[in-house]
Image 1 (cartoon, rainbow, N blue to C red):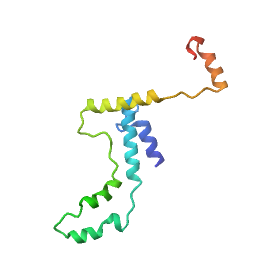
Image 2: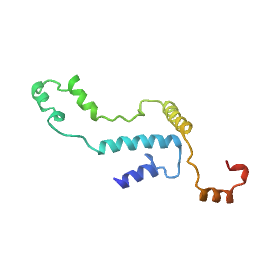
Image 3: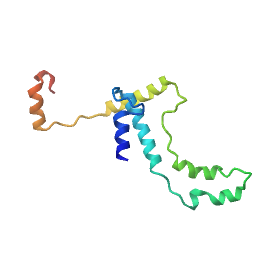
Image 4: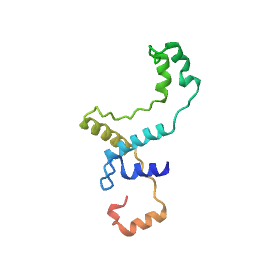
Length: 128
C-alpha cells in the first residue's frame, strides 16, 4: 500500500513526473482517495449479500430495489470529477478548490533558527 500511495502522490494519474500542476494535484488527490476507499474493501455479511432479497425476487426479477439500494450506496464512493464533464468545467471546479485552500491557508510561524537562516539569504525588504 505504501508504494502505491507514493506513486500516486509523486507521478500522478498520467505518470507525468515532469509536469506539476495544482489542478492535476487536486485530481490526483481525489483519485487517490477513491482508490484507497475501494482497496479498503467492504463488510460482507448476511445483510450486504442480500441473499434473502435474491431468493425472494427469484431468477426473473430484479432484487435491487429502493430499500436494498440503500445498502449498496453506503459502500459506493464516487469520484467527484465525472468524465462526462467538459474539460473546462473540471478546471473550474479544481480551480475553485485551489482558491478556497489558498484563501484559508495560514502560514506557520517560523522558529528562531529558521528566521536567522532566512535573514542570511533574503534582503530585509522581502522578510515579513
